[in-house]
Length: 125
Image (cartoon, rainbow, N blue to C red; front, side, top):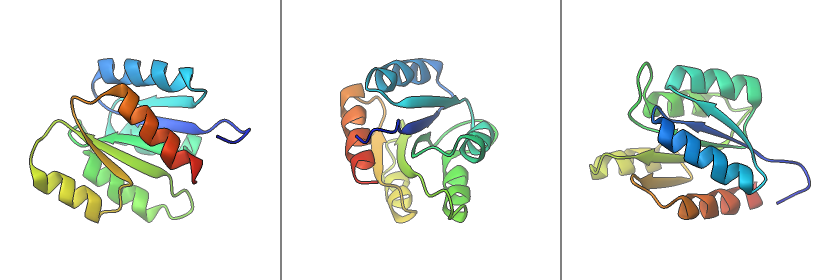
């Protein structure tokens, strides 16, 4: 990782996931920003310009696919995106991948695996 602190935005309506990723990413030296739904997530993207977004699909107010569509339209920001979902439907993974996510992770996930993905994606940003 470079000398400047990379910023990671975690968008999820599950407080346990937010808390665990905040602690784990913070321990790796990332600047962590949290959002509890898609609308808040988009506002945080515009305000905080994260280098990477960990984005849940199923959330209140605006789902992850809608957020991803908006992110793709924000060409100046262009954060890396890891999409997560507890839904086992392979169409979700296929749609996410065709929409340009950098990685797709099924819930429940191993936090160390997600940390390794973040490290890999931000090393080459």
